[in-house]
Length: 495
Ligand SMILES: *Cc1c(COP(=O)(O)O)cnc(C)c1O
Image 1 (cartoon, helix red, strand yellow):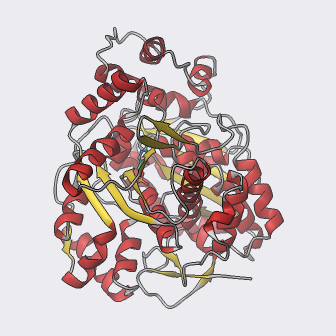
Image 2 (cartoon, helix red, strand yellow):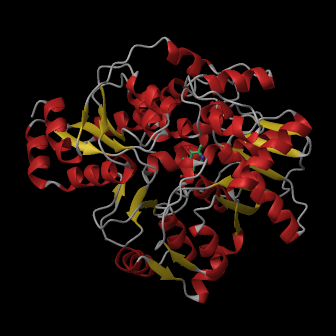
């Protein structure tokens, strides 16, 4: 069995999924999409008894049939093992009349773990099929969450090396500590004297550097990427939309066939787009509620059909959503234009040349499955406070953006459809912002103080992944200027 993948921008070459996973991005700059979206060959209610791992095997096999059932089964059971603190991997928790799909029980306490615990195994399996037999080197720039999740996922994976660049002064102290204490002799972590854009730009230049790529090839290496446009990151995220729906069915919260909404805190549009694929595959979804923070480019896009990135990026308490260009949106443009690659390519070219584009009325009509709004910083804080005071449930800042927007949706649309809120990070990952929302005073002496105070106030124990950090030795001390990134990579690979 096989399934071909093609670019959203129309280059004629079609490739199988292992190559789509290894390449990350198509030659014409487009994103890989399956030639035809797979269809379920089982009834949704027949999947109710599936464990998370069984469901993942079923859904991921539909997208990546080149891997054998046995290979995928092992990869999935290795990814979703006891490194997740909840046996259900992504439990849906009922709080009053709200449902939270908790995606933060993985090793680094954020939703990125769901894809980044599995992607390394998919890359390893893909590299085995690659006729060139070269060794993948994963090169990543991070603003925090992705870097740690990728390091954790790739640590110890055979035949793959990972190099992560982070802005020395642009990540939270906990995020930095998480990265520089990373174990695994195939991992390298380097601080950049600069901001996230400098790190990102530097990595992009390395990817384009032809002499460097030739040198790499001579030594049997090639660069690959673990960022959120990789189809190997998107597909594992489709699973939890089904799993959450099935959990509600199992608990008799909904009837078979009943439609539900999902409210998703959105940055790069990867998480919510996986929900759109789930809907296209037949999951009964009414609306996908796209929630932004004060960086609300997507709010304007969904409401007037104009994507305009010409503005200043704001720093908010939900940093993983501080994004002006949501790269996975390209896949949505492709679907809503009825898979018109010419139209998609033109829009993306306009965006890169002019900083904005406007949809035609015909394409804009395809946005009807979405509702979008945004939350101001004070709304995020007051939502955290009021839910905690009324129920004792702690949610992180990203999740609070989604809940704030859900409240606006209910007011605007008077829709009583049951809605699942995607909870993307542990509240302890953003302890400082939570303490501030809950009026807990901090002395700023110790980076663990906020976690302790939050735990004390809520009675919820500090997650092990944070507690352990205090004891771990610092293993990565390297730092460099953006200009020195190339030489650092050459030194690490000995080329
Ligand atoms: C990455 C991230 C998001 C945004 O997800 P996208 O797929 O980029 O839209 C939301 N919350 C947290 C905690 C994240 O790490």
